[in-house]
Image (cartoon, rainbow, N blue to C red; front, side, top):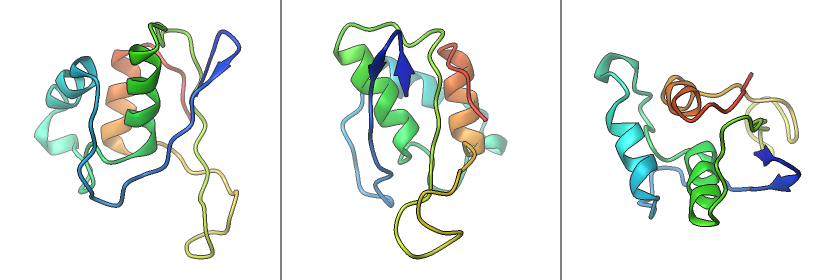
Amino acid sequence: MRVNGQVFTDVSTGGAARDLHPSVKSGLDQVPLSQRAPWHGHCAEAGCVSQALEAGVNPAGGTSKAVNIGTSGKGHGTPKPACTSCQHLLDQFGVKHD
């Protein structure tokens, strides 16, 4: 995620617990149950927003771009759209996404 020239990077945890900023936890709690991805809260996008907030950076106006990593899926470095949970979270914080 890029915000005013600052870059925040993260990786999805694959379901492992992660420590997120309280505002991110609250934002994830506001995602409707019917819109939550099976891996709700474990994506890199949540980690990036959390990092920005922890650094005192307002993520509003930032841009989020995610890519696939590794050899599985659609190929390393290929664009990966935000999941339904992350779409809601990024919208709440005013972050642009694909």
